[in-house]
Length: 178
Image 1 (cartoon, rainbow, N blue to C red):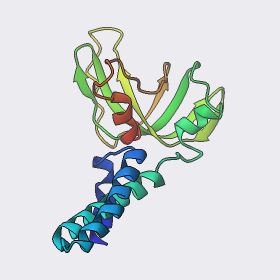
Image 2: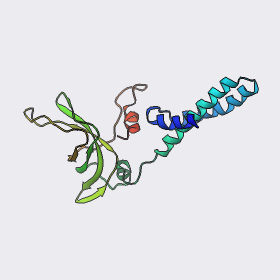
Image 3: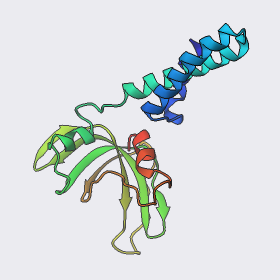
Image 4: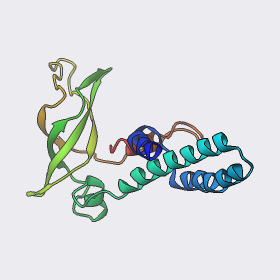
């Protein structure tokens, strides 16, 4: 039970695709009894613990695999939001605005969206890149927890730019619900 619960708790930080988790679970389920048969009790127990840990992680990951109806991804998929048109997003900041050369970056947890005069509830996180029009604009002083309403002109899912085998930025953002 402890290994299963640990897998659930660690799941946001321990990512394995479902097919790899199932492969590991199958290996543990087949290998642990063999070890018990040959009187390798400690090794069998360790393999069983690994299996329960991976099972907990897989269970927690599958629970979050399909976003709810109000999630931004679901609304885009069901064409309730048109990402080619501007969108007003209301919510709160999950991160403070970080200054970068010529821009700012912050994560906005959406609570509602408005497009074409229709306002609807929303969930999900948007990574916002803000580029001031002029260098003389005052610094963006947004802190964690601030409630904001912004007009988003270019909404898109995170994408990868690297070569195959490079860091998977899109998957990393998806695991953090961005």
